[in-house]
Image 1: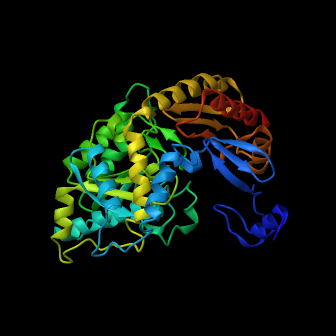
Image 2: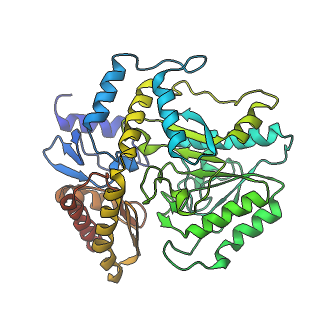
Image 3: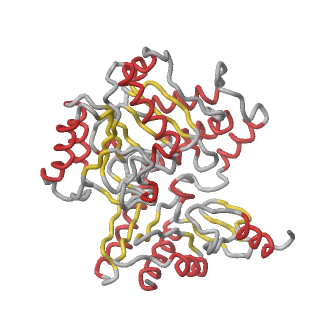
Length: 427
């Protein structure tokens, strides 16, 4: 295969891309390199990446400091098993995570990906109650329109009707779903918004092991932004009814919503916290599950005497070394100004679109800008137009949205906003 055309033909024939048909695959565009916020296509186009590689590349591509960290670690070891062994990159990244999260989150379990982090959190909650002799606590309570990943445990707490996983109903464990919050971030709190959740948790508390929820911002389930008081009430109800609270911050962590972690909007602390995506700056897959001393001690005091999970690539040294440097970049604090500037520009650029008859809603929070259309978006048409405009976005359903790298310039973000406006008119 010498030409790009031959490579793309092979790709379309043999390689299965995410959420794509093998019968009628969506077009794919061949990337030769990526630098800063730009994707360089082999065909010559240069695209501003408004997706930060699905939330992860917050520092941009080919970041010099992350590159140095990767090269330095490669010269030492790329991987070593974590069973019975440890190493500096794992120790360093865990210390930084403990230092930057809530003081009650003392214990860290390193996993492979966001979905696996959710699996770990769910298993941790089940094993916690098993260790306490409360075997009846096997259900998870969450809210509709949520998304927590593509593995089976994670799918069982995704929206049961509207999510991409509805075809697996009947096979997945049946969990409990409260109505999604309706009071938007920034609106006045309405107490009735928590009633569905409150009723369920009070009536079914004996069987609920944990609540799992995306704090403040629901991601792939609809990009919905809800009131911090809802999260605060969820936390209160969990404490009152002796139920663990798992927060899925895989997408929201490390500054994306305007706070270092989205739970800070409500000034609470979960029992279990899932982190991923931006953890390595988009370089390698890695996730982390943080929990309290009480949860870790209880799990470790049960019949098994340990937590029953151990991925082959757990605490991969190369990923940990890059993550450690990525956290150093986060801790410098530049993200605060960057996210504030992105939010301001997104609000100024996207808010007027609410007057367009094709648009149902416009919402912006931190480094996230969302335009919800009345009708479904034609992905193929949109993608082709975006290439012409020199911008990379990945609309889905009725949503056209951007989650750009934090380092994006004002001029580059203006181009992304302009592309969104074109897509609105196109649909």
